Image (tube, rainbow, N blue to C red; front, top):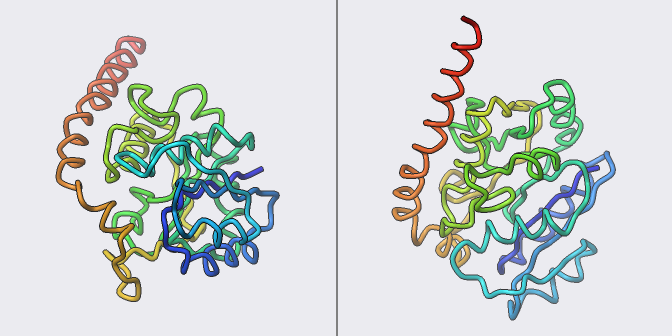
Length: 235
C-alpha cells in the first residue's frame, strides 16, 4: 500500500537505524525502495540490507535527490508514496496515522511530523510527506510538470517547499500531527554530524532559494486566478 522511496548517496552508517525503524514501526503493507547512484562505494552495503534497490542511470549531479525520488515513483505502483531520506527514523504508528489523515481528507499530499524543523512542528510544512499516486500522476507535485513529485530544476534545496506550497494552493494538503518520522538533520539535530552528502545538498542553497522565490509567483498567480473564478461563480 505504501512505497517508501529513499534516495541514497553514501551515508551507509545510517542504514541500520533507518531500516530497522521501518521494519519495527510499519504495520501496513509496504515496500522500501532504495535509489542508489552508480559507482557509489557504499552500494554493496546498502544492497545487502534486505530492502529493494535500483541504481539510477546518472551520476549524482544537480537535482539528484529530486530525480531519484521521481524515478522511485515511476518504479513503484503502490497507491501511496512516502518521500524518504537516509537520515530518518520512523516511529510506531507513523503509517497508520498518516493513512488515517489521507483517507479522512482525501487530499494528495499529507505531511508527517519530523520533530525537528520548527515550521513542521507547527503543522505548516513537511520535509518528508506522503503523496498519493493519483495526485502525482494526475496533477503532479510541481507547478509546471518539471518532475512527477519533486521539481528537478533545483540543485537540492526547496524541492519539498514547492511540493507543499503547490499542494496548499490547490487545497490538496493536510498534516498528520501524530505521524512521527524523525528527521536527524544536523541543522536541527545536535546529535547528527555534517557529512559529504549534506555538504553537497547545501552547496547551492542560495541559488535554490532564489529559484524558489521566482517560481513561487506561478502558484501564487494560479491561486489568485482560482479565487477570482470562485468569486465569479458565487455571483
